[in-house]
Image (cartoon, rainbow, N blue to C red; front, side):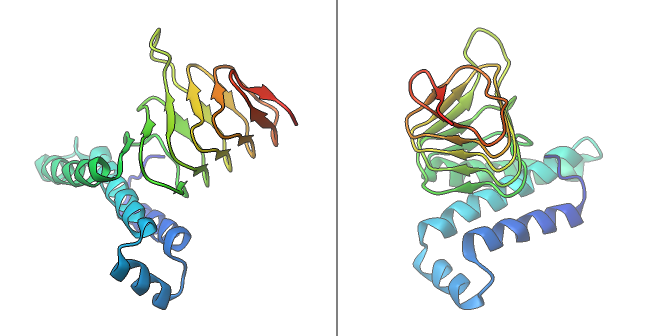
Amino acid sequence: MQIKTKKELKETIEYEKNIYLGKSSKARIKERFTKYRLWSIFQYLKALRRAEYYFNKKSKNVYFEIKYLFAERKKNKIGNKLGIEICNNSVNKGLFICHSGSIVINGEARIGKDCILHGDNCIGNDGSNSEAPIIGDNVDIGVGAKIIGDVKIANDTVIGAGAVVVKSFEIPGSVIVGVPAKRVK
């Protein structure tokens, strides 16, 4: 996703805020006060979205270049604490990260809307080339699952915990599990 306008930035942040903190102001205050994990993860995603916005605008003038550097620094600072590394423009809106810690998404990967990462996930290339996964919308990626190489994952797919996906699964609504991953539904 490439956020190009302030309006898109605001809409994306509000969409993700509702996912993480709900619409209730009481729930939002509680999450913020207790610094619960969802609040911290949301702060990372908000920093990611701002970094993406300034990254996409930085060629326009020096102001955006400087804003980008500060936004990227903030994103990386929060990400280092949480163990999350997501490159700019690789994830569409609505990403839900259930648990922080050891989440890496390659800059060449593309992840669709409303996907779920349960933690300890790696989505990247296989080291032999720069091709990275393309993941559809509404994909649920279980804890410890890895998706590696030039693969495509269809919409509404569920990837089981600990699965290692090294080939494409292009049938929507599939359930894939195992090492290497196989389709079971």
